[in-house]
Amino acid sequence: MDLQPITLDSIAPHRPLVIAGPCSAENEDQMLETARQLKQCGIKIMRAGIWKPRTKPGGFEGVGTAGIPWMRKVKEETGLYTATEVATPAHVHEAIKGGIDVLWIGARTMVNPFAVQELAEALRETTMPVLVKNPVNPDLELWIGGIERLYRCGIKKLAAIHRGFSTYEKTAYRNEPFWQVPIELRRRIPNLPIFCDPSHISGNRELIAPLCQQAMDLGFDGLMIEAHCCPEKAFSDVSQQVAPEQLNTILSNLIIRDKFDTTAELSEWRRQIDQIDEQLIDLLSKRMKISSDIGRYKKKTGMPILQPARYTEILSNRARLSETLDLNSQFIQEILKSVHEESVRRQMVIMEESD
Image (cartoon, rainbow, N blue to C red; front, side):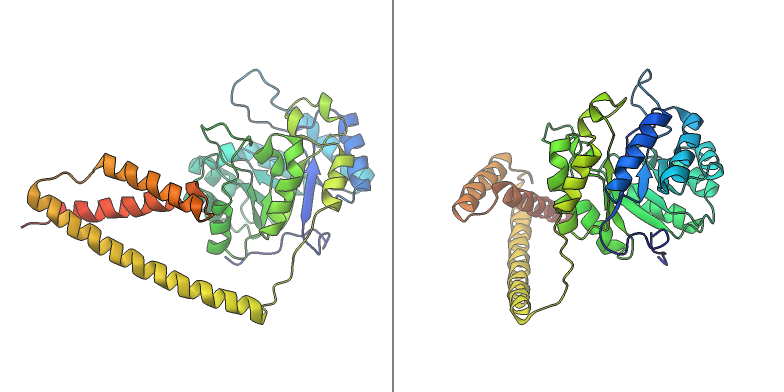
């Protein structure tokens, strides 16, 4: 993709470009007071939700277009650029007409290709930055598809926002980070800037600082953080918003690692890893050949492919072995599950072959 840099008058020459502000625009006083405090922290782009998608009706769904004049006043009084979420073409037209500088498309909207296409058409040929949050579920292809829809409508200032993914399991996070997904996105579209939204990943202001550091260590280009002049009185997302003072502490303590030089020592370690990877692939090839032999034997003797007791035994024994070798047992089990899936696939092919 021939993308243009996501910068506004070169306001962020170095990582990270930070967008901060309240979850929701609540009233003019809240917006202006938050903006003044954010400016003192060095923030240049203020975010606020005007239209708020809610899972169920009855919650605070934003003030709507009434919030646009407040955003405009923030810009006039403090000089901060403004950013908000859009979910419909009508939102796009109102935001552009109101002078909003940056738009983002939310996770709920990103699950619907029809909705994304409508937004792309409404934004056609716009020169303003458009940020694309990941879909609610860890579906990389859906995320990339949304980005491509926007790009094909002539939108060149694009960036992705990693805000974590929904999961049925209870974890420390509101949305699991699943870092491998944005890492693969970076591999697939190397010149696409990626922001991290630690507020929605964490759901807890105490976890925001370490998540910001992890994002920087992974080479993310920017951060989008929810900040409110009085977080405990916020209309929405109370537990994940930080006060500007806390935001300033978080950003001041970030360690930015931008050295990419390759040393002789690093090159040697990489050579060793390459060699080990070749050995792993060779061993996997041998293992799959044995799996194929087993498949042919099962076919000959009328045995079923799946042997649940054997599979459970493998997972259990290998997990214990991995722990003795200082390896994460869950990591090893995930590898073994993939190996087992491929073994089953090979045996199914053999079963289908004509004699």
